[in-house]
Amino acid sequence: MLLFFLIRIQGGKCRSLIRIAFSRLRSEVPFSDVILADVLTSFARVFGDVFLLFCCVLVSIPDNKRQTQRNCTDCSSGILLPLVIALPYLWRLRQCLSEYVTNPKLNRHQLYNALKYFTILPVLTFGYLLKQPGHSSSNFIYTMWYV
Image (cartoon, rainbow, N blue to C red):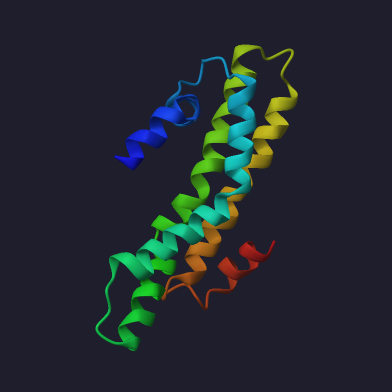
């Protein structure tokens, strides 16, 4: 009931979130969606922390303290955490590419902006690989993450 009430009040923002997440590449991007997507990228790490909260505290009810530590380690080393953090950046990347595709001559700076949002992907990928048991001692992955 409360969720329905919040969605009804914040209907415009919900429509903006749906446009940000699911619009096509060749669609116009309203300025309000650009601002909202930038805010979402600013909160990307917070979304990751909230995901860890739900994973560690609410989903995995532990029998003892050791199991709690193991469940939280499983949550933080899984593939879902980097995906949750990467989603706002991927949405903003799609917006930049969409603005470039609609008018390439005027929006050339959007390619540079898209490159900025693309740079989070290698960082998240190598950070994820470093947390995996078989790759933690790999010198190449550590060097690439550090660069």
